[in-house]
Amino acid sequence: MSQTISDQIKSDPAIASTIDQLLSRCQEIQQNINGIKPPSSELMQSYDDSIKKFSEIRGGELFFPYLSTGAGNGPFVELADGSVKYDLTCGIGVHIMGHGHPAVMKASIEAGLEDVTMQGNLQQNVASMTLCEKLLDLAHKKEGSHLAHCFLSSSGVMAGENALKMAMQKNAPASRVLAFERCFAGRSLAFSQINDKPAFRDGLPEILNVDYVPFYDANDPEGSTATAVATLKSHLTRHPKQYAAMLFELIQGEGGFHLGSEHFHRSLMEICKEHGVAVLVDEVQTFCRTHHPFAFQEFNLTDLVDIVWVGKAAQVCATLFSKEYLPRPGLIAQTYTASSATIAASIAILNELDNGNYFGANGKTAQLHQLFADGFDAISSRHPELLKGPYGIGAMTGCTVHGGDHAKVVTLIHHLYDNGVIAFLAGGNPTRLRFLVPIGALAPSHIQEILEILESSLLETT
Ligand SMILES: Cc1ncc(COP(=O)(O)O)c(C=O)c1O
Image 1 (cartoon, rainbow, N blue to C red):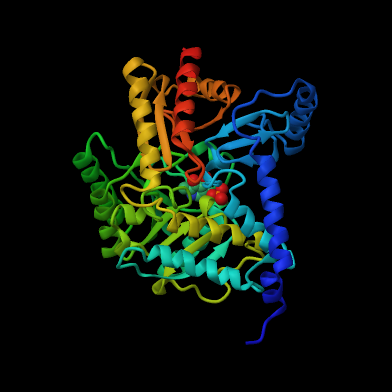
Image 2 (cartoon, rainbow, N blue to C red; image 1 turned 90 degrees about the vertical axis):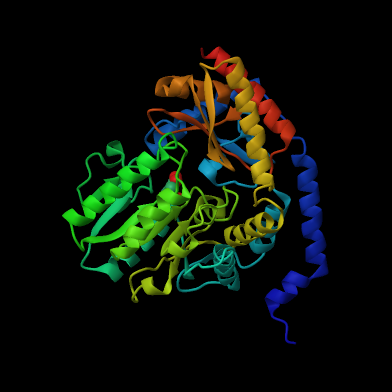
């Protein structure tokens, strides 16, 4: 069989052994990043100067004084002041395998030896197709999916824009959109309109008609489902045939780690179907963080999804859609979606998660979540006024601390940061503490230490 030049590079023994040597030497050094470390006094001044300079350049203060060196190991990240911290935010849910993961590094280095181009709509490498096939394969893990196509793009919100445009084009002239109260879907002009957060569209023109449906309340499953169904029906009656799509964020991420239920989502989705309203599912934050690759599989909703989009943990963002929503030429395109190294990293991560026993009721993700849940219970039993939880699911683990008081939660997050744990917040009223954990890198001993730091930081901020 004829060999391409690329095949020759990929199968060249000298190149393969150089990559192995490179990786093993790099890992040898990386192993020294293996626990929390305070900043080095010699680096502190220049670090502070860099943080100030960067805040000025970007036109606003950084939430954390965070500038990484680019080195990390597992759940640990090294900062440019020489400190090492646990990273439980992971770029807001991006580095799901943690830092310096060997398989991800290997895939990136190998792809870095290709001709270092970006891949885009017009010119793509074989790897783009492999990634699309992998995402579709994961979407079909449960039977009944209508998702037939996959289109890559460069950000979560762009993948969402593509979904919305496809739904609007098919269902034109219907142009209204339905979404959940407290939802967040990204920061394009259209999605700033959809987000249920007035501050995120301050000063922007109203370009979309959006109507809201209240989300599920775990304390009142039947009542909240009935209220949501009644609200949806009333919108559909008030504006007949005017809704192009309803956006479902099945587990609210930014909104505060609120879970829906199968019955809740199914009831609403079935009504959408009856009225020709496209069922759009935003899985930018949930993808690969529940016990299934997709949260719609977690809630047994596979048969009802028209369009779904992913981002964050997938590294490369993508919109998956059914044949009915195939866009007409010109509607969606993208100069570039990602670098070859990122696409290779994405494939490596998805293969690792798919083959590495992460999913399922007893998978690694569920086991790690349980350790956090037990730890939260223990802290809560000692200090019931300080912590309630867990909230979330799988690798989206949260708790309500200090009664959900926003200012106190922000103070706690900064204490945690100074004590060596990078965590973030979610929601308002209550504001919650949010861990988007690197499931590919966390061991039970790490979780034990993180929980000890959480408890002492809580006590410090009381
Ligand atoms: C549910 C959800 N949708 C969309 C987005 C937007 O993704 P991106 O910032 O990659 O555009 C986010 C980001 O936090 C998100 O959580």
